Image (cartoon, rainbow, N blue to C red; front, side, top):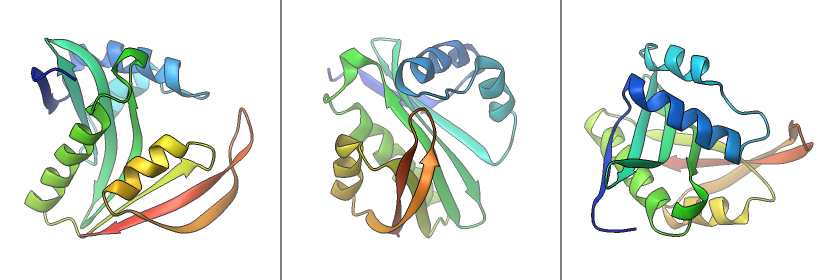
Amino acid sequence: MKSLLNIESISKKDAHCVAKIESECFSTPFKESDILEYIDNPIWHFFVAKDEGKLVGYISFTRILDECQIVNIATTKKARCKGVGTALINALLDFAKKNGVKKLFLEVRESNASAINLYKKFGFLAVGVSKNHYSLPVENAILMNLEL
């Protein structure tokens, strides 16, 4: 991605773009109304990636005590394989360190090799499988953790 990539906390005006990326990337996407509710929920957090002011990706996660769960990370099709996912995970890791988070965890479709490789690059380890976790299509999830 260009050097003008900026990572920032989500604002309500970003919810529409995040919902659009959700619908492009996930078979059961969050709706804009869901995202607006999550923005107001203190355990939910979103960082958005903007390139020259245009939203090109986001990461959503929850934080409870000293643990964070990555809920979704996604980019526009044009922004894939350009460092956006890496920048978003780096922003999450900075947040985690500043907020005393000791463990990150997530579930990822077992067929999503690019996401699995991205998580492994950061030191996430596969710790289990959740059978038939996803629908549309039905697929197992790989459970991954990162101890900080």
